[in-house]
Image (cartoon, rainbow, N blue to C red):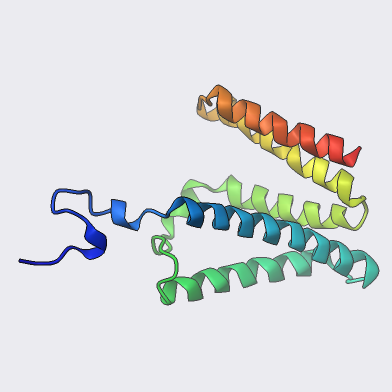
Length: 161
């Protein structure tokens, strides 16, 4: 008789033992929010206070660092995702250019706008994305998602004030 890992019974779904717990999900969301907030502050400081000359170099450096962190994490089996497939960028072609344009224009505007205004403008991309996905891809979103998105935007507008 073989012992099942983590007390899983023989008839249970093998992927269920790998699903993250509520605590792991909450910590992941908090970590993401903290990193997102801190990167905005660091970018603002680098581009304004310290006078970093190029938002493009900053953006490319951040993208390269992200790719390296993801690759090292995958090699150490911390995270799991499929290997790179050369067909994917071809299928998604205009999206990588739009992402890079969004990233660079966002960094460029960081040095020119106040943080509250920058945050509001960033939050307005979420409902725009939902709208375009509905129009172009025919996606349908639940009322809960729509209300959540508008709560995020409203919160940003109130905070910017």
